[in-house]
Length: 141
Image 1 (cartoon, rainbow, N blue to C red):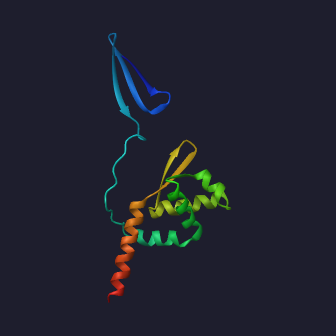
Image 2: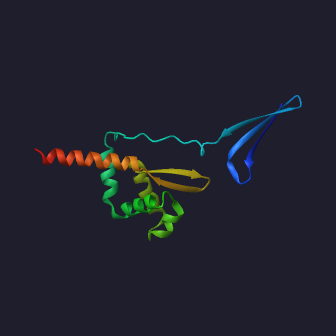
Image 3: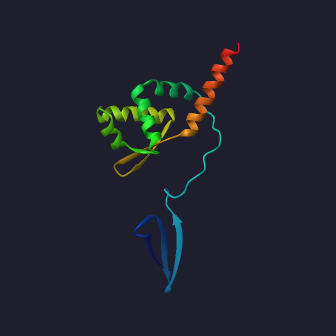
């Protein structure tokens, strides 16, 4: 049995098919790679214990907040673009990105040597809801 995995078309490398040859007959199996399968985010999420404080700390730094704004405005942002747009070293950008990822505000995807960051609006909404709940709870007492 011969198994060949190849892209469906050169223009669309995300969709692959596998051709199995057995006894002179070809059988093609279609499958997706990890980039084509998506899950719908849940409508409301709960912040993990301590996450509220981590998000508050991450957003307290003006440069980190500006990076989050840039990532959110562009619906994703390559790390190299952040390094070019902010007048700090790559190590500083990396540190700020680490803090945003640990807070859960940003998720990253690595493709080879390139890192792309995307904002997580569901976490931001959960943070805003929790902030309103805490402030409204203390204002009412």
